[in-house]
Length: 293
Length: 293
DNA sequence: CGTGATTACGGTTGACGTAATCATA
DNA sequence: TATGATTACGTCAACCGTAATCACG
Image 1 (spheres, rainbow over the protein chains, first blue to last red):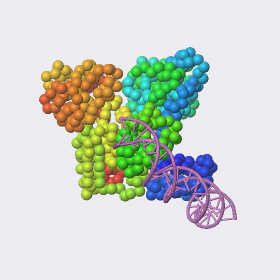
Image 2: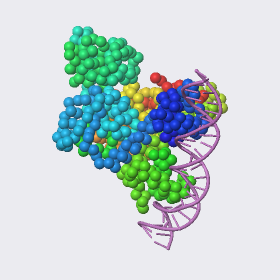
Image 3: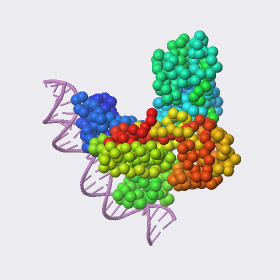
Image 4: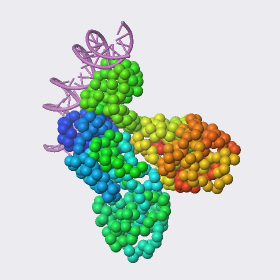
């Protein structure tokens, strides 16, 4: 199971074509055919059907392994490479939308003050991409967010041995339109809101599946879907009554024309987690200092 | 970065010798030398010092990647192999000590009733080994335990795409000797016990580091270390006053001459999680039915 | 028939073993 | 000087490309 062969296998499966994969990889059609044949001979199983080219059940299972495997391989190579080369002055920080806070902005400013000439980029990414991007060297630093029990770490996919540290922890609140019957409550229980209309904002809010897992309840049906990464857009929709949204309290309170009611049960907090490789360059180390515990 | 080369690299690093690794792998000394040279040329970095043979900093980082990488590779191969071959009648279940419950015993009995002739083995393993053993095919089924917030999943190392399901969830209690000043309380808070004397039983109890993480407190210093995997031994030591132990309530109540006081804060539960591959054989599927949610 | 996968075959490259050399405790 | 890593070199297998063949739509 040479990684080389796995790489062409995933390319073929993605392209659904030997020839297209060959073009993409810079091989001949023949070489790709031989790669797949070698893999199938090695595993003694058909991995792809031909005409149309599609993964067999065994191939589908192999695909689930191949992605993380190749990612880890890239991560290992990137890590060794970064050890050898001098730490770059460039700093690339990847954040999920709710992880971009005033404290982060201040930490970046501090890094630029202490390391003049640092070119800093802040990039908004999906939560799921951040550990992978840090591991493969695309990011110097990552900040993800999520909800968890107080002082519990967030469950991150361990694509590679990365260092993680809490960067912030804050209470949660539900955003409601001002006139909503629940808007004048002093606190809300999540289990009482399972049947409410919820905003589904997978790219910038808390995934509804997480709320279901936390309560054990079935509900939290999406009433309205928001695909943007702009938190202000989400606040606006929630304040306008398109559905409830659960957000860090400080963020929820910024909803224009909306009310932010603290979540009192279950005991959950919003958490921002810092992710980076073991060895950090100059400016990255300054920003990483925003870890709190 | 051929996995073959990585495999010899970890062997050399473990043996601290090229020749010993060569014997272990069935290669000549020369081949091993060439493998390491190829790896170092590929990554353009020295990975090992010679005489004595020890990993350089870069080599140490690579070692951290190599283990999981090779494990995943084995897991992929094992999974494909298990798909191809007929499901075996043999059933091997690996459990951490606190995951071996009456319900599991009943489920195994049920599997044997429904699939007569099944040879079943139950094996006690360290928590950390279970997902890896399931992934590489050493186990058909794994049961790990740990503490978590109610209805939160346990954080498992994702060595491979495995299916996990909750198998049990139960309250926690602290085991104290009968005469202990706290033994007559009706409930205890973990944060009040940070400075108490604790039993450190990494192989069968709850790791003290987990308690520190859950409370954010520094304490939970080990006063007495117990290296066995026998829970009854742990109960005996706790009841004799060698230190406190946190255990599932039903287990804690079995302490001979000891008191079990429920844990009331933080809100934590003991959880048993079922781990298996996507495709299960006959008897394994019966046991897997003990999942509860 | 034509597009696209497979098979045949040859040149080149790379992998491993033998054996000689080098280096260090 | 002895143990153990490296280098030199020969053999053999594996890999990839060219080109012919095969098969499905």
